[in-house]
Image 1 (cartoon, rainbow, N blue to C red):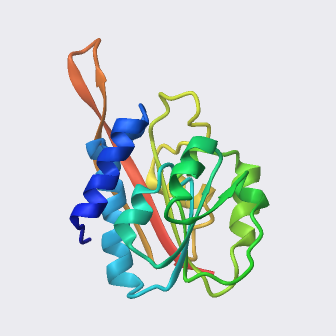
Image 2 (spheres, rainbow, N blue to C red):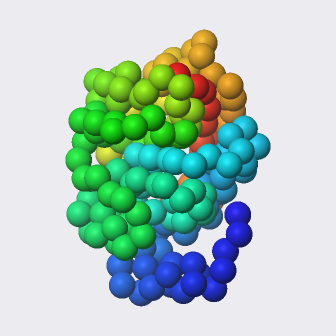
Length: 195
């Protein structure tokens, strides 16, 4: 990761102009995105193309700095922001149609989609493409409809039970537990493989 002043100014503009832009910079979000960039640098050196599913405001794309990046997102305001810098596609990830075989596809929103949507998305990844998949064990949010309790369940639900290069987990500090006066500690899971 290497940032110049223009990138930092762009992120500050995001925070100033989008009330939820700051959410992209929670420590847990930065840790998750940094983990991906570190593994890409190590396992898939110098990729030329990338498609990020669940790109939000494109901060991961900014951190990866892959020249040919497409961001896929449902939210129009996120697509508008990302379109200033990246190719965008709006819609359900299971309906995305590949026009070429990218070097990497990344899905950071596995807990937000049904098993049917995920399976269709995964089946559509072109042969020869590396994939990076993240999820977590945070069941507290209503839109986390496919969170997983542990890394083994994550692997099974995400088609990583036998075909992967890397499968790991990291602890992170989640939302504050006001009832008990302490933070919640959760786990983020990540799998990397090649179709």
